[in-house]
Image (cartoon, rainbow, N blue to C red; front, top):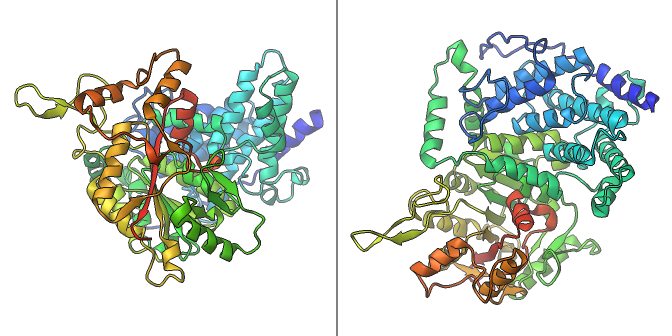
Length: 598
């Protein structure tokens, strides 16, 4: 055991040090104060997270507060990451005892570290990964040191596993450590996925010795199937996203204008760096974003933390939608003729409700108004560049802007997804005029005040989606390549409204489900009984549904063959909010639509 611990420390000691400190002459770089002598690595990670989420978080900061009030910017985040690397080389990780390495890893991931390093313009993605690799090595060392002690309870080990996985370094790997250990004989057994898997396997061993009872989780840790797609890490991401302020369109435009019109003075050029990079990314042509622009593309509008498309992009098998099966999807790995399988399954989808998507052959794009969430998604992509292979990208832009940009995408749109958009407030009977007004009596004050004021899924957005789903005119199988639109929400009235708006365009139609919702009130009632409430049909309705029924007792309900009673995405492709709904026993309303006459 002592030899193993020495080997872990050797890996940190032999981490290569950047010798190229050249910087582009076009961007003046202000001197960066050396912080690593005064702050430990965990404190530095809190500082980085403060910078990344400044102005977007509703929670009180727990870090040093040195950068509170400044704008989110990638350059400063990477300066602090450089300081953390120096701290690790100075202390050999001795100030990251217990679970602190996992906490620091999670904070740096949330801060949106990408492949750009402020002090190096060569092999920059490797430079960014090095900090995460060091933290994993320290985590392994700490599990070996204290993992079996009675003073280190199972919940600490669980939190370590969950936070490392939520950082996007799970069983999917983070790239080769061994390649970066040139000249280090002790690193030959550690490389990429093997290192992350070793961490999880060791955690599983420690939990098993402590008598932890979740056999499924223990099996996942032992087999290396635990990772970024697992429920527990996704719940951490949901908790973080739930604390973030809802960014309105006006705030987004103000943010973009304020950043892009900053003075070029030394003190402010650093602040506006992330905004300039964001604009440069938005303006890049598709062939510079994806390695193959002829692939079909999956689009996540309002992508949040990006978990859905990050995990869908990691699927390596042909899968087809079949809502008679648990989870809605079945593997189709045994068919050697993938092209004929694609055509055959697409044809069946027109009448049977099966939707075939070869996830491994798609590109993926997401967009969100929250810059810190976009940076997180791109950070995961860059830490796993070999796996994603130029197929995934996130944009800081509004929904209409993304869909407009997609009109120039050369390939077909395989799927457009909108998961759990912030719902509008219910319209209540007004006081004097007899009309309707937004209900402001209770609830989330950040919600859009009405359907036409701030709600993301506007009629104009749906019109754009219906056009984008049409196959390209030069497609070899145009009728078989029309895309689908997936919408899901926790609010029944929102679900019905969006479906109605789609059908009112007369260019889209619903895809019938094989496992439809037969009686939504009965589902509410069964759900309420499990929570100890509800006594009779409809008595278990959520409060919002009750208010909606009072406003419109004859409203159409989210039931029938157009509404699916089971998930429509693979288990591995669920967004973090859907996982939270499963844990909270919250009903989700799901439907899929496609272009009419296709």
